[in-house]
Length: 133
Length: 360
Image (cartoon, rainbow over all chains, first blue to last red; front, side, top):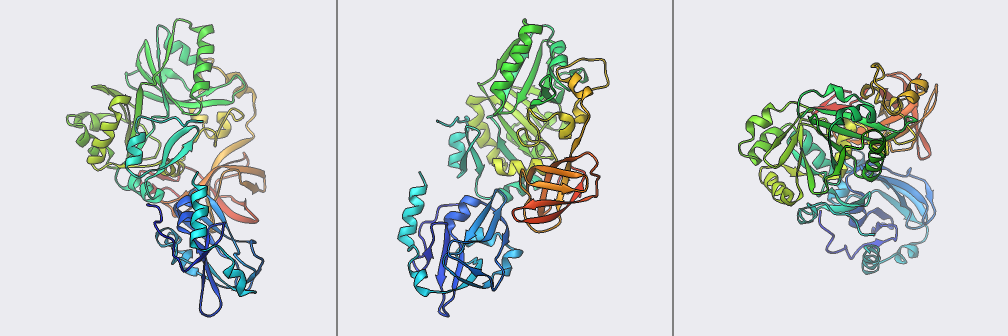
């Protein structure tokens, strides 16, 4: 697996390696980044938060397990869970093959401005580069 | 700290390996996908760099007598040249210092292969024992040698492709036997539950042989798949399933300990005296999730602990080895604490997989 050459510029990112996509209906879609899936390796199991669950920003809310390790996912902002990607139950490996399509859950943020305050692609890239050494 | 490198370090990097610190060694975790590599070994053939493991040669008059005392298994089972035996090296209190394979070559030469992380400790222990009982022996760590494992249902066919002229040898060599062939020491042993070979060869020739194997269609396999393969095969991993605080009887290794014969060996008195309160069993997770090392196992007979837990790519579910109270029986259901949940697991006899076939 090669390194990600370019991060999608339309997405927002967190320091805990989630990506966040602002949908037109005011919800956000959340997954894990190429960098995170590379670190974890082959995915075998995803535990998603319950639809309707209220989450605070940075609250542990989901688990992505690879053969190697289990990683917690954190709510990028405060809000409510509105959907989960049930496809990943049978095909968790989609997180490895296409991490920016394999979304894990959707939220409706309490405050849309919280999403804008997340990292942009270049800030996240700087963070990843600084973790490399 | 600078990581130690095997002679194949450059080759791993050239093949795109994800390198990790493995007990102080810079080793390949995978070359892309651990699961694909796992299936490659179950379905075809793969090769592993296991040069971090240490080969020792023990030479001199009386080496068999010394090993009869040093090892928990009985080297008197080894009567034909090249025959191999799996054994534990025990402390006098029965704790496991290491597990190893010993090869009988002749009455003045036995070869021993030990784990990487324990090698220095093992050698110090062997020298200490030999100083007292067999000072004439020479114990030589062979840092000049590398080791490559070729494993899988097509391992034999692809090995003889890679080593022209070796077909008769590759096909005729019986499991747990080794033979010297040119500058190589070829053993029909492994750590995957598949047919295969472990080849000890000069470090200087290891990179070219690795390339030759690759050209013969043997794909490189990282330590990640090595662990899931050995777990499916129900093989113990030192430092996980046993260590110096655990005796072999509580680690599923009673079959490797000879308590019947008159022979005395280091740790025997402790094993005979000690009642066995726990045993090693297999677990198959019934719920979704992944079992991991050190998770607590609850049974009606008391608690136990997972010693090796992972996801089984062959069975497509999570499996584990666990040390539990002796009263736990095959077929029992137990609960495993996975984070904030109790998940159901079934107690099974291991191995889980042998020669590509599920035994569960």
